[in-house]
Amino acid sequence: MIDEKKIQEAVLLFLEGIGEDITREGLLDTPKRISSMCNELFAGIGTDASVPLSRTFTASSNEMVLEKDISFHSVCEHHFLPFYGVVHIAYIPNGKVVGLSKLARCVDIYARRAQIQEQMTYEIAEDIMKYLKPKGVMVMIEAEHMCMTMRGIKKPGSKTVSYATLGCFEENESYVNRFLTLVK
Image 1: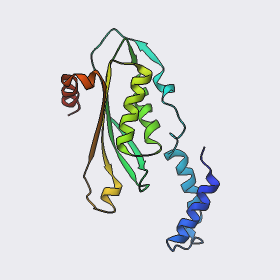
Image 2 (image 1 turned 120 degrees about the vertical axis):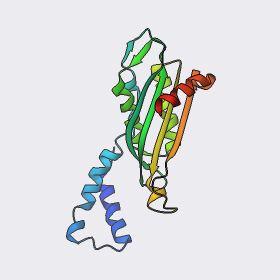
Image 3 (image 1 turned 180 degrees about the vertical axis):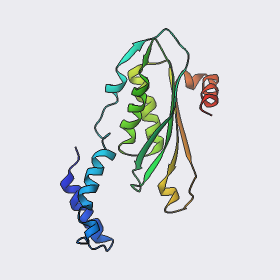
Image 4 (image 1 turned 120 degrees about the horizontal axis):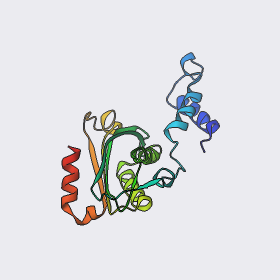
């Protein structure tokens, strides 16, 4: 649970630390606004993906299910700057499918915490395998990182792509190729 009082105190110290006048009209409510924002941006902390992924339906199909272009935004744990983009998820059912919105909810659980893209990719794939128990899963994330675009190297438009394969996606290159074709 977010401690709004601590966040507000930290924001005041931060503003003073960068040389701002914390009594300036535009900054008076900034600590409250930031603590409120943190409730939203970090809502995934302590949230378990088993809840959305446990509601399944029987399905006789064993063909690939692909949900692509699931938009997300997250915060990089290294610089606390945003990164955002899309997630593509495919799985091969093993007698059960999950409602499509549940895959997006799983993405939100991991995106709404301080995170690195590579770990987020694997955590989504791992939880889909764990709770849905498909024959295999592949997750790919394409994201732009503000730590790359607004500071440091300053390369706007550059994208980072990460992926995770589990189960039959690790063993069968044709599944991976079909996934990549469908995503593009």
